[in-house]
Image (cartoon, rainbow, N blue to C red; front, side, top):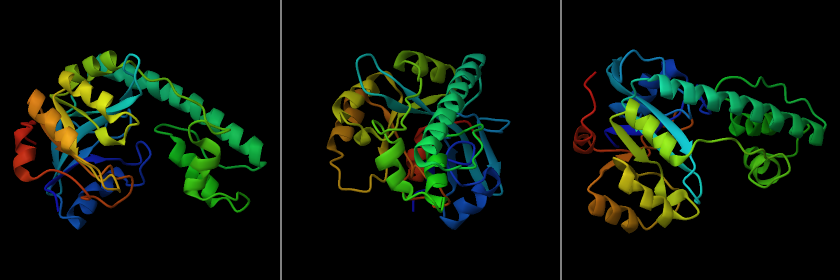
Length: 259
C-alpha cells in the first residue's frame, strides 16, 4: 500500500466519505497521509497540514481549468493556505455549480417525470444527480447509465459549467499552495497537450488508478525533462483509500509543511 494517498474526495464535494471518517478510512487502508482534494472546495483545517488521530491530513484542492485552445484539465494544489483570491474564485465556482446543478436536476425531472428529492447545495455535482437517478424506483437508469444517457457531456440534460482559465487557476493556486500538480494526465482526450502544461507546474500526478493498462512513459519523460516532482493518489470518492499514491520518500520530496 502507498504511504500517502494525495487524491481523496469527501462529502464536501462529490465523495461519500465524511470528513470526520478520514482517519479511520486511512488506517483501514494502512495509509499514513491523506490529501483532501475536494473539487473547488476548501477544507475546515486550521493549517496546511494537520494530524488527526495519528493520520497526517494535507489541505488540498482540485481545480478544473481551461487552457487556451485546449481541453479542460484538473490541477491539484497541496498545502493550502487560503488567500482572498482563492476564496473568491472558489465562491464564484460554487455559485455557478449550484446554478448548473439545479438546471440539470430540473431537466432530468422534466424529462423523466419524476421528483429526485435532492437538495442542490454546497459541493453539489453530477454524481449526486446520478446517484439520485439510480436510487429512484421510477428511473430506468443505474449510476453509469445516468451519465451515458442523461447527464454526460453531450447528453440531453448536460449543462456545461464555467471554469477559470489555466493561467488564472495556476496563479491563484501558486499563491496559496507550495505544490501545484497536473491531475491524472493520461485521462484526458489529448494527453500530450495536457502534459505540455507541466512545464508551468511543480508536479504531475504520476501514480493514478486508471482502471486500464496505460503507457506511463510519456509522464516519465515529462518528469525528467522538466525536473518536476510527482504526486499520486486514488481519486477516492468513497471509503476505499490507498489504491494509488506515493512512497514515504516521494512524499517527503514534496517538502510540505509539518503538521
